[in-house]
Amino acid sequence: MRKSDTRKIVISIAAIFVAFVVLVVGFILSSLFVLDVSSKSANALKLDADQRAVSGLIKREIEDVSQRQSEVSWWDSSIIALNDDIDRNFFADSMLGWFPKEYGIDRSMLVSPERDIILHAEGEEFWPGKLADSFYNQ
Image 1 (cartoon, one colour):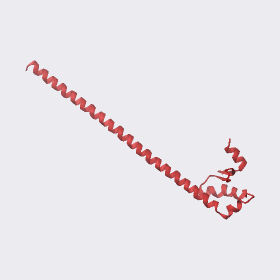
Image 2: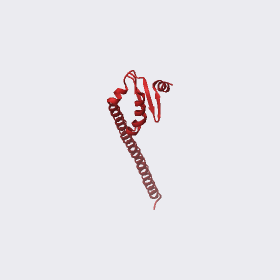
Image 3: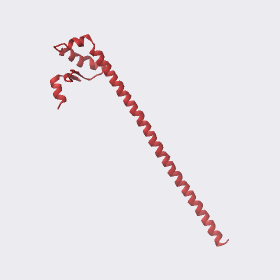
Image 4: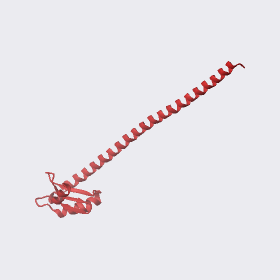
C-alpha cells in the first residue's frame, strides 16, 4: 500500500468522524432547541389556564358576595334596622352571627351611601363606624 493511499484512508476516516461529530452536535442542539420551545409553550399555556381559572374563581366569588349582599339588602328586617336609629344589635347579630356561619363571610361592613363605614365586623370583633374608619384610615 502506498503512502498516498494510507493518507486518503486516514483523511476519509477523519472526515467521517468529523461528519459524525457534527451530526451528533447538530442533533443535540436541535433537541435542546425543541425542548426549550416546547417548554416555553407549555408554560405559557399553563399560565393562561391558571389565570383563567383564578379569574373565574374571583368572578364567582364576587357574584356570590353580591348575591348575598342583595339578599340581605332587601330583607324587611334589614330595612327596618336601617331606620333613623340604626339597630346596632341587629347588625351585630347578623354580621357576627349568621354571616360567617351561613355564608362563610368572615368580614362585613355596613356602608352609608356617602361611603362612610357605619359598622364593621371581622371574625368575632365588631366596631362601630368611627372606630372602623380610624382603623382603615391609619
